Amino acid sequence: MSTASREAELQLALTRYLDTYLARRDRAGTEALFSPTSLLVGTAAGEVAYDRADLERIAERDFTQVPDPIEYQVKASKVSILSEQFAQTLTELDLGLRITGQAVRMRHFRLSLLWRRAGADWLLELVHGSQPSSDLGEDEAWPLKELEDRARVLERLVAEKTAALSAV
Image 1 (cartoon, rainbow, N blue to C red):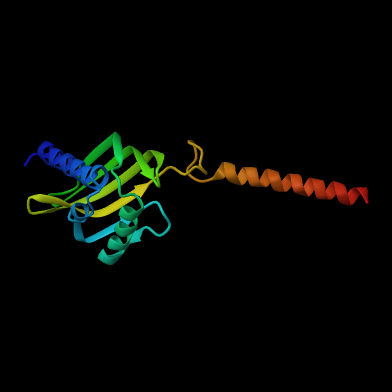
Image 2 (cartoon, one colour):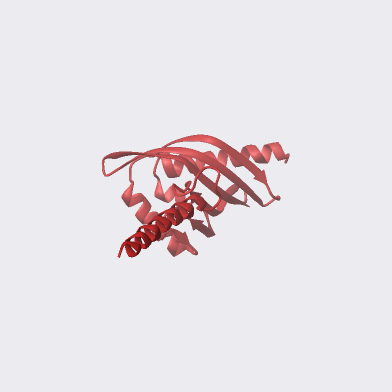
């Protein structure tokens, strides 16, 4: 099979996953797309799945908290074929959902997926979702500006305390 054909297969597998998980909110259908050995890292502190029980616990919370369809718009996507058995996709999405009746927009959601071929299908081996940190500027890999802001506050407090002590 040509690389272009496998990339097209992966693009279809990605669309099937996004439609099943987000647009249809089909929990059983979504879980069927995961391999028995899947791992997952989500955006919340407790969203780390090392085994199937973890994955089911996270899915229960996810589908309970947001049972309604989630609109998605793919902003960018890349498929990389790693071998005959493995491939990865990287996708940036904008999401629109309702949580307890409130409209929520999640912009620039990033989704990294590792896929393994299982017969004629591609199953998910690793799912990682992330969002840009609001603590980081666009030009930062680490929260340097936050640390600089903290240092300025500390310098101001020291200067005020020093001035108060000098006045005594």
